[in-house]
Each structure stands twice: as C-alpha cells, then as structure tokens.
Length: 247
Image 1: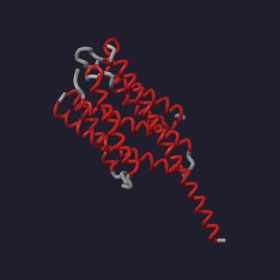
Image 2: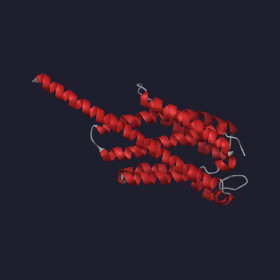
Image 3: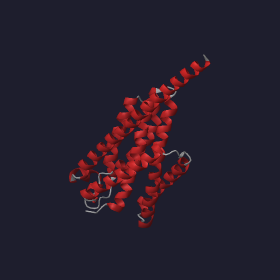
Image 4: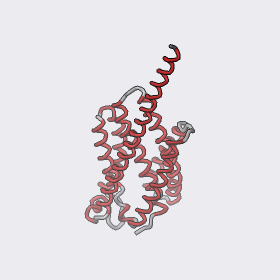
C-alpha cells in the first residue's frame, strides 16, 4: 500500500513537472513574442520619423542632428516611462501592462529616429542582424546554462547605473574617449544582462507557477519582455557606433 502511495505521489509530481515545463515554454514564447512586436513598433516609428526631414526637424536640427527642446523630451521620455512602468505595474492589468509596453516601444522609436539620418540604411540593417545573432546566443546561454547567474545581478546593476550617469555627463562634455569607454562597457553590461535576465525570467516562472499565481505570471511576461527588449536595443545602439557607416 505504501509503495502504491509513493508511486501515485511520484506520478502526480511528474505530471505537475511536465505541466510546468509546458507552461514555461509558452511563457518564454510570450516573452519573446511580445518583445519582437515591441521591436517592430520601435523600428516602424524610428524609420517613419528618421526618414522624413519634416518630422525629424520637429525634434532635431536637420543639419547638425542636435536635439531641440522637443528632442530632449523625446530622448528622456523612455527613461521616465521605464520608472513609471515599474511603479505602476502592480496597479495595471496584464492587458494594460502590454499596452503600456507598446506605447513605450513607440516612444523609444521616436528617441532613436535620428539614426536613419545619421547612418546608412544598409549598415543599420547589418547591425540589426548582428545584434539579433548575438542576442539569440546570449539569451540561449542564459536559458540553458546550469550555472547560477544571480550573483551577476548586483554587479551588473551597479555598472548600469554608472553607465547611465556617465552617458548623461558625456552629453554635455562630448568627450570621444569617454564615449568609446561607455560603448565598450555598455556592450559588456548588456551582454551580461541578456543572459542574466533570461535565466531570471525562467527561474521566476518556475517559482510562481508552483503557486499557480496566473495574474503575476501574465504581468511577469510583459516585464520580462521589457527587460530583454531594453537589452536588445542597447546592444544594437552600442554596436551601431562600431558597425554603422555614416551618411
């Protein structure tokens, strides 16, 4: 009888594990799918504004590409929205969080639209392809590795804060040496964050799936999409500094 009970318990646990594995695949597909749609929204807005002199002149000088007042607002709007998203996520429904993410993606497209006036279309496409390949490899590593990457989190976040501060300072200094250092360090930080965030999204799902917290899981997919989206965009922008051919 005891053996039968043990076998029944083991069988139930096995079924539950299989359900979690299946749910994890669906969860990750939703994360990557939402992120991909966000990238398409960003690319569409950036292309529409960046290839139109009339639209671009609303935010930047068409000759120097230096931002005007509206340009500065557009530049910092995504950063403000990220903080607002984090503060409001608990009060938003899953559908509301997804809508907010797509609005954020459009704002990001507006903030980087200038690249279509500064770089050739071919070099932008090539850089996007290189970024996609690198991102896929880093994310796959984070998903499959048995190594615990959680220890990287604090180090990477501290580096990210320093990177943001240095980038803001260099907007006013315009130092080529500092810009080069920011680009190299930024690439390393966001490469590490891609692997780290992928493993974190996977681990968080497994932890909450056992608690059957579906509302949290739906919002978690959006937050995971946002994290990976930001990593992709930043890797792309840093690589563009090396691979992009100026107009």
